[in-house]
Image 1 (cartoon, rainbow, N blue to C red):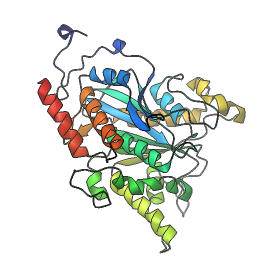
Image 2: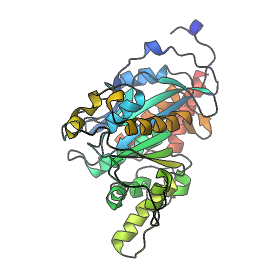
Image 3: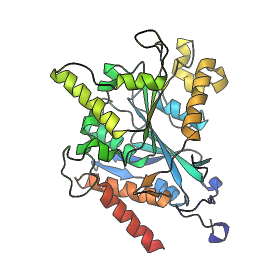
Image 4: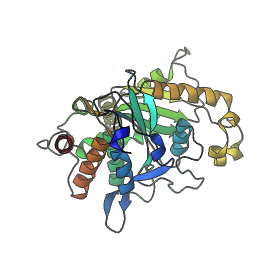
Amino acid sequence: MGKKNRRRSSSGGSDISTELSQFPNEPIALLQFDDKEDRLQVNEEAMEILQKIDGKIAVVAMAGLYRTGKSSMLNWLLGNQRGFRVGPTVERCTRGIWLWGRPQKNKLASGEDCYVLMLDTEGLGGLEASAQYDVRIFSLATLLCSKLIYNSQGSVDEKAVNGLSFIANMTKHIRIRADASNDDSDNGEEFSNFFPSFTWVVRDFTLELVDEDGDPITPNEYLERALAPQPGLTQAVMERNRVRHMMTSFFKDRECFTMVRPVYDETQLQQVDLLPITDLRPEFQDQLAKMKQSIFGNLQPKMLNNKPLNGSMFAGLLVAYVDAINNGSVPTISSAWDGVTATECKKA
């Protein structure tokens, strides 16, 4: 797109001028693992897409255990049945982190225009990947997005909380400053300044939302009860409570949505992503609509050091984080930001 068609629209401006038709309306690999080279690889096609986005961005990332339907959920949020790849087998469909090639124009909660980037991350806990690889992918998604959606099934019980046990070790995989030690010295409170808002989506939910007295509670209250410290001093209880503590310290802004199974017929579940939204259970449709309104009606820009990012700045952060990992180091937020601002100054 030539300069004559572009209005002033730096990350600090409010104009949205990038023409969306130039972007591919399909998923594009953003980041993948190169088995031969044993390193993470940033996709140049995705980088070219990001460089064209000249305006404020909001970044929505979907994470969750593998084979829990997170890609289908992201497609429902996109309003595109044939969006991100889904499949009925037990193998992971999504590898690495994928970007929906065409950003969506939307409004931030402030009323300003923005582009929304949608990211799908590789499912956690698969047989092919190590725990270290899982936490790296999750950590990168957390560093890159302004809204993190965690998709799970059933309920927020001990098993579900235990599935997020790697969160307690995220401080070993991310540093805020270069002089910080590679342990837990950077506390969760400090990390929360750089981490996104968190939405937990509980799929196929069958429980009644009531407290111990039988009084109704909201999904948010249900989540907070599940994340409250549990009594006991055994090693197992203390470790689970550590996960809870890190969750609530890292993600200060959090919410929960419970959703029924999308269809009644068990046989339709394998192909549920092919069904029109109108064929899904009315209750599921209502719950999906409420979640979409909450997510897209309260968008926050991707920020770093109180500055909103545009596409090229986002791309620069990604490269800096991946380079650190490939060099055997730990992504350092301040160092990555210094590199991005230096690049932006050269452009000015």
